[in-house]
Structure formats: C-alpha cells, structure tokens
Length: 100
Image (cartoon, rainbow, N blue to C red; front, side, top):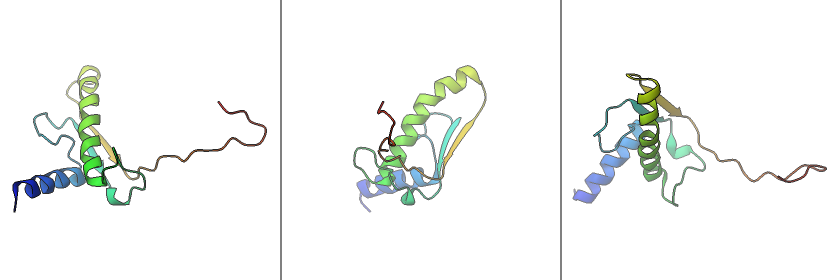
C-alpha cells in the first residue's frame, strides 16, 4: 500500500471514528463524533467529500473550542455528536413579509 493510500485510510478512520484531532498532539478534551456521516446531505467543505470534510471540520472546531473549554471549564471534556448535517435551503419570504 502506498504512503498516500495509508495516509488517506488513516484520515478516514479518524474522521469516521469521531476523533477530534487528526494529529493527536492535543489531549482529547474536545471530541467530535459523527453518526453515519456518509448520509449527511450537505456535508462538503471546499467541495470535498464527506471523509475529508469530517476530518477538516473536526480538527478546526476542536482547535477553536479547546482554549475556551480550558479557560471556562478546566479539566473538563466536551463531546459533540453530529447525527445529521443538512444546511437549510434558501427560504422565500411569505406573502406580506419583508426580506431582511
């Protein structure tokens, strides 16, 4: 198996298993879990597939939340479990309502 294939397999396993930090350098005080991310209807970041998007999103949100968690709740752990990601469609204003 090529190195690039092993890397892709590793990143995919991390994303699907819900590991928050791909590099593993930070403690697991923030964990992101996905339930069947392949079924998320709108889970695409930068036009990439759900595997890459899940990994990228987990590392970014963990990086952003970790400092606040440590500051406000020292020694605590946070687990975010996503069961669906479905961005809302553009909603047309109802008759008689103004657009904002």
